[in-house]
Amino acid sequence: MKTRLGVRWPLALPAALALGAGLWLGAARGSDRAEFDLAPAPRPLDEVRAAKMADLAAAAERVRGLKLKQQPPWTVKSPQEVYGFFLRAVQAEAKPREIALATRIYAAFGFWRPDFDLLGAQLEATSGAVRAFYNNNEGNFTLVRAAGKAGSSRGADIQEDAEIVHEYTHALQSQNGMMAGLRMTGGNDRAQAARALVEGDAVLTMCAYAAGRVAGPEAETSLARIAPYLKTIQRGMAGMLQSPMFKKHPPIIGTTLVFSYTGGSSFAEAAYQQGGWAELNRCYQAPPVSTEQIIHPDKYFRPVPEDPLEIEAPDLNAALLPAARIIDVDRLGEMEITVLLAGYVAQAEARRAAEGWGGDLYAAFERTAGAQKGEIVLAWVTAWDTENDAKEFFDAYARALDKKCGAARQTLKDGLVLDWRGPSAKREARLELRGSAVLSIEGADAAETEPLAKSFWALKRSPPKPRQRQP
Image (cartoon, rainbow, N blue to C red; front, side, top):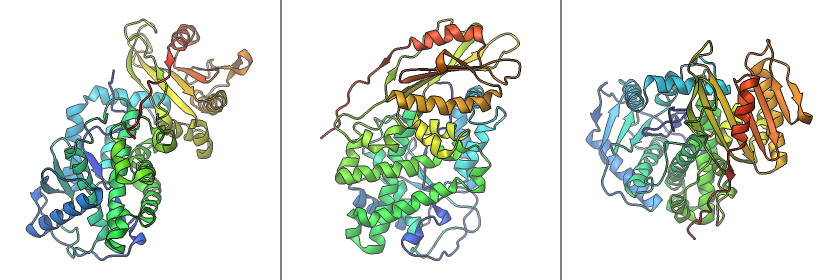
């Protein structure tokens, strides 16, 4: 059951995120930009630029070792037109109520305030950062340039050319059937991992192209020559999170966008170390299924990847909470749990507490009647690799609930159960540790919590079906 956008983009593949900010040319050499005029309305490329795009398409094919079945067309659009494109795409996929529910669910977790403008923030962050993108649904490219003055005409701008190679990589992925088996929408954590694979592949390709452009064709296959470009992009894009555009939004907005490129390129680099482009191609046959596998590639690059536990979903028709209905069932995954915790504890502690993640599942309930109508109740089970991992998360999330609930915690059952109750509580909650699992119930009173906790502790947690990666 999926009723929300969460913080993911289910539409095109907006790539080369803000690379025009000069994040990585220091790894090669500087370049000057000459300006040219563009009409404010979308239009085809001129003959000179179209020929240049054809050359870059051939370069992408050479570097990536794949062939285009056909040449996707290009149009030029202004940032305002791109904003409108993304807005229409979201409106076509999600109704206003679904966006509102997504906002309220993540507010209940503590990612942002209840009045946060999720749609506006995503549109601003995405459309404001994209220089070019490939639309997988329509099979075409968009070059984003402000009306008036923009672009380069000398053909010596390695950075801009590499961005175009990045986009052609997405066309190569699509036309060679590599994205057919990826779940780019659906479960949020799984979709994040799929996008990271796709974007990381494209970042590695553009860096290989740049290395060859500067140091000669042999550098295109030398990871030692490619790595400086990768590291500079990763540092630069991580630094973007401190830019005014992202700082004014909750961290999850920028982190989600940037993770596909930074985490994804680290994963792609690990794949290339294993066996070059052939190994990266194999990743599409049995793709990573969690952000944990992107963050820790060693959990993926083994004969049988370490996939998350399968946690049974609750019965959507069962009366688990009076006068309430389940509106979403999903998982956060290691990346989002890290961001959530970092809002309440130090960043290093948040990373440590999220490591050892073995799977999670939450159900979001919406109250349908009474004085609390419309309020969100969360039931969230997390599974961990070891009991020590579970205890580390339990301690960190307890500190988060101290701040979220605004009331003194009550310690029950030798510290294995914590409650936040009473008239001073902004939000009631329970946190319970059992072995290598932790259960959080948030927004339910004491009488409601007991049966709800019993139901969620009864959900089966099963080892995943082993997947064999192609040798």
